[in-house]
Length: 264
Image 1 (cartoon, rainbow, N blue to C red):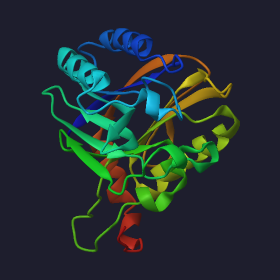
Image 2: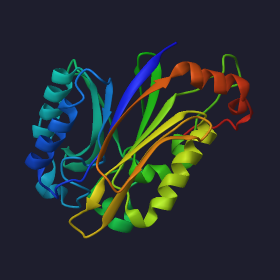
Image 3: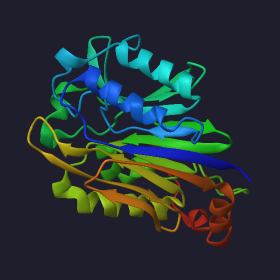
Image 4: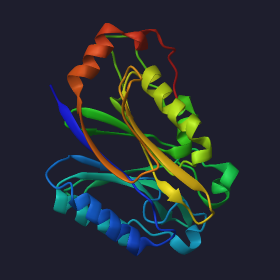
């Protein structure tokens, strides 16, 4: 059965300093050479969660995308995380799914965090991205999307085989420590209700607004069991997910068959 080896990078970020962040992250990624297939970085990994897109945004041909292409190719990995992008005079909190051949997909954060004014600076996305690697389907989302379960929900059909839309639900985040209980609880809930692996990668440290982030990055199995959890420390963690375990759980507990049908 298929396996997927994933590495999460929980790190402090240097506020609005792209050059330093990219150099720091490249060193961490290079330490994983030959050990992993997918590397997951936090939300806005090159800047921190900034509300200054006018000063920090790049195009899809910009410095950070070129960096992602180079690092992905050099390490023969898929590399993902979100960056600030300008397109057609609009700003997006855009997750990039960069493959080692230079091709990429992207997802624009759907739910903008109005509490911090994100909705006043960025434009929301309107399409999910479910990507595929080695037979695994991966639904990628960003931070605040976690609070909205319909956006992540498996949308089942009734015919066999059980038509799960995806196998892994992945969140990249800059989620503050003061709401870490919600972060941990909702990640577990998403795993249980969608019968999938969930990966949540968060930053640590103080940002430029004096908001502390405790990390609490997690990997959770389809029964809601925590396979990995780290708080308050920088950490690089690698885990191999097994499709056999996923399919065994889904066959023994075929709860999705009984779910409500809907369309987003």
